[in-house]
Length: 177
Image 1 (cartoon, helix red, strand yellow):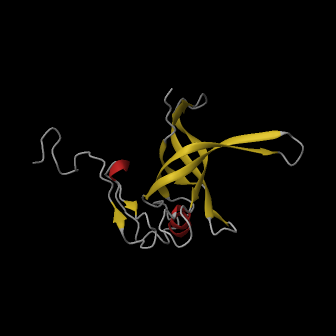
Image 2 (cartoon, helix red, strand yellow):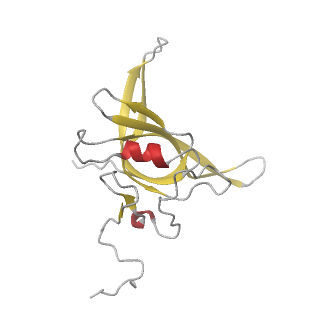
Image 3 (cartoon, one colour):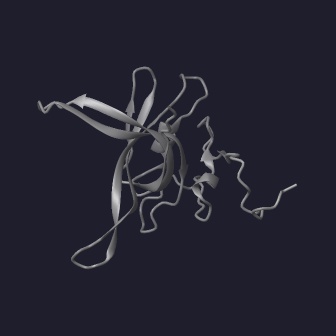
């Protein structure tokens, strides 16, 4: 039986990234992320309200030290702050642990980030430090957003994934050649 474990989200960071380094040279950036989309009617006012969904996410540096690889934890640490908007792509994992207060086993789902794109920081004066080199497009759908270079060494270099979809300037339904 086939299965798929892929998550794509656009939302905002609810806190600054928390960075942990490992003894083997690895690094993880933990972030809180909020997305909306669930709407419910407020019984007191009769108005429809967006209901946020909060997700814990982790970005890891991938690859051995000295080897090229995905340095997503470094990118999150350098460019994202509380309030910044981002597009995240990843997969869910179930984390389990023993409650230190004797409450038994605990568990939660966490999004492990496989790819990300930087979007606009908060327009209400949120911290935009470090966002000067990040892509600032708002009209393109997430799949067309430039992604940070996979090597993470040159933050001014971006890759545009070739997903086979027509370019934004090509009319739909026409063959471009």
